[in-house]
Amino acid sequence: MNSIQTFFQRKKLWLYRKLYNKILPDYYYWSPTIATALWYAVNEGSLPNLRHPRNFNELLMAINLKARKNQKDRDLRVLCADKYAVRGYVAEKGFGDILNECYGVYDSFDEINFDTLPNQFVLKMTTGCGMNFICTDKSKLDIENLRKEVEGWFKKCNNFGLKTAEWHYVEIKPRLMVEKYLSQLNGASCLTDFKIHCFNGAIYHIETIAERDTSGKFISCYTFDTQWRSTDCVKPQYQKSCKLVEKPVCFDKMKQIAEKLSKDFEYVRVDLYEIDGKVIFGELTFTPVGCYEYDYKKEYLEDMCRFYYLTAPHK
Image (tube, rainbow, N blue to C red; front, side, top):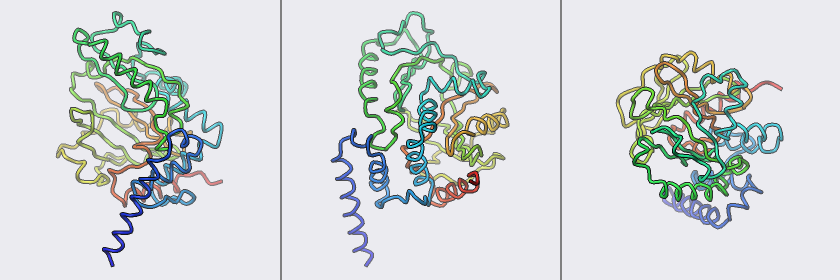
């Protein structure tokens, strides 16, 4: 009996994936609900319950679709998903002092005057994710190779996120921004990301990414509650390091910042750093891992959904 069920489950998954890959990305912008359902199905093997979400992934997808339909929520999400425009939002909330130094924002690669930049800097797109370049020694910079890479980023931005129903990325004007290279502030080879998951202004937990491999993918991920007690949220294969991240010196301030920045959203992940005891803002993330958090255990995905319902304002 189990073998028959497995056979049909695999057949169903194959069908979902075939259908998902057949549909052109542009169609997904006009039909994000279909994109959402298929994206969940190709990962989970079943369609999501978007009316009554049962876990964090279904909840993320439902919130994402809901935000698109409300013009006020839509505009705010697009503003805050823009890595440059969000700086104004953070400053408006009273946290201008935590913004990393920005050397400039540009509509094209050719607008950048590399002669005026410091020896170390970070170049990244204002939309999407994974499109960034870290320069640790400008004397070794290959401008032409970087130009080709950046041109690829701009092309990628035309439909970035459409097949995962992350519609807000397409509505952001693609630009380049150059920021201060944070590691030079404390000499660390790899910064620790403090990713604070918030629902309706309340913190669920803090996810830490302390190590990354040469490709930039994380190899060590742990979670902590608001009292900095380690939780067992992440699957074992993503906890390859035995060394837990130490509690940040400015942990209380981090929590205050996250609570205030997340107040306007049903869900947002507030990404922060700590450099020499000072909080530095990273970004606001609305659809982590394309709304499909694969590294969390099933029971925690369900618990995050319950936490949302507990924090949701009663109407």
